[in-house]
Every structure is written in C-alpha cells, then in structure tokens.
Image 1 (cartoon, rainbow, N blue to C red):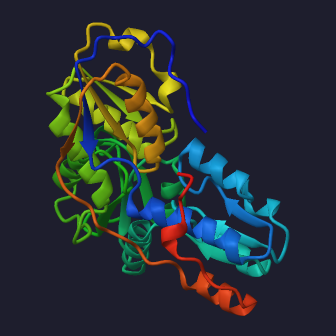
Image 2: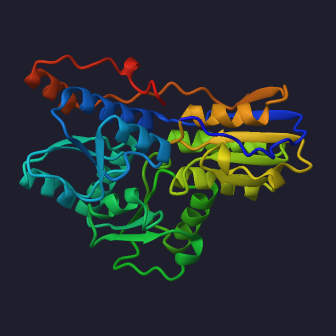
Length: 338
C-alpha cells in the first residue's frame, strides 16, 4: 500500500535528518514473524488476540494474509489456534485458553515477560508493587493480572503523594517498557523520596529500543525545525517520542503516514527530522522521506547506536510444524511486505 502525500507539500525544505535507530525493534519483528509463520504452518484460521503490535499497516497487512484479529478469546472457537500479542497477557487469559483447548502461541515480547516475572517474584515475597505505566495500555493490563491485589498503577510523580500501601517498608516498583525515560526517572525519584526502602529491578524495565529511539530524538531535536514521528495513535512508544522532542523545545507531530502531514507544519522550515516508533514499518518512513525530498533535498542519517538484538521464536511453532509434517520457513523470508 502506497500513501500519497498532500498535494500542497511544496515547502523549501533544505535537509531531512533521519533518526537512527528507528522503527521495528526485536520484539516487534519477532511478533510479526510469529504471526506470519503461524499462518504458514498452522491449519486455518489463525486468530490473533488484540493488535499484534500497535500499528495499523502491520495489522491490515497480516489481516490480508489471513490472520483474524479479535479483542477477546470468547470470539475464538474452541480448539482453534490463537496468537497472543507482543504486549503480554494476564494469567486469566492464559488459563481461559488452556481450559478451552486453544492452541496458543505466545508472541509476548521477552522484555515484557521479564516484567511479568518480576511482578510474580515480588508478589510471592509479599511486596506491594508500584507499576509505573498507563492503566489502559495492554501491557499494563497484562502485568496487573499477575498480582492484582498487590499492584498499584501510577503514571506520574504527582500520584506518588496520594499513594498508600499496607507496609511502606515492603514496597517495590516496576515500569511499563515503553515509557519516557525522563518521566519515569521523575516518578522513581518521587517514590524513593516517599518510600526510602523501596526496591526495583536490577536493570531498567524500559526496553533498549525505547531508550535508543528516545536518545536518537534527543540528539536530533536541536538540529531540526520540526520532527515528524511516524506511528499509530495508540502506540505508547511513538507518543513518547513526540513528548521527548517537545520537552527539548522542538515542534513535533505524530503521523500515521505521509497523508497526515499538514503543509502548515512545514512553512518556514529548513530542516525536518523524521523518526518512527518501534511498531512502525520502514516503508512508511521511506514514503515520508520520498514526499519531503521530492525536489532533490539531501537526506542525512543521524545514528546514536547500532542495534543487533534478535529474540528467539517460541518452541510451539516448531512443534506445530513437526506435528503437521511441514517445514518451518526461515525468518529471513518474513516481513517481505513490511
């Protein structure tokens, strides 16, 4: 699918700066690969609970390939194959799938799974757990389900003052993986001030890709007049990139694709920055750059770090392929259309 730029986009932009890294992270690549591989080796239909990742083009592309997206498991027939999204699920959802004989393939990002395991450990040790995140986000909903009676969800430092827990000396914190590093730091500082004995994970829960993309925006922000962040409106990490740029004093806009660009944003602009959330396909970046650089405008990449992370696939896929006597395709053949 190719998007057309607004016809009025004729701004005299002199340079386009591309943030690096940008776009797909290892967890997103793994999740998309899992759905495509499931479509290759599983008997149809293959259901996917929730959006596999928060990007409209990704979901529509997988739907065209045969994936059936549902909001909840009660839309999936007993005994069918279902893929759980990259954002994770609660134990109740997992148990429901088991009870109904669903063939479940878990595409939860391993870094989200890490947060779930930390929540389970702290709950077993009788800690009150402060989960820093957005209560309506799929990832937070899944983590909350691990210990709902012990987890308190907060999103800002202002909420810390009102927070009350059973034992202030037995408290731990965890974070949603896609938050702003700066905002999270402020919340953790407020928590430590109010609860001096609070403990946290040995390593940050905010994932490497979120940190790297925010660092790239910070590097770019002072060198551009406006930053375009490509990502869906429900993509937490893409929204955070907009916030990071604006905090640095740079005008920034979230766009789903090139058609969302308003010519007024480019009036008087010489340098445009472009980045993409961790769920955004590179094709959307290419279309945006092509539209902006249609008159030979130079494009320069600004890298802060190279990424070489790759997460293993769930064993269930290989098991299904062996049971059906079909080969499991190479991951290198996946994501061709994205």
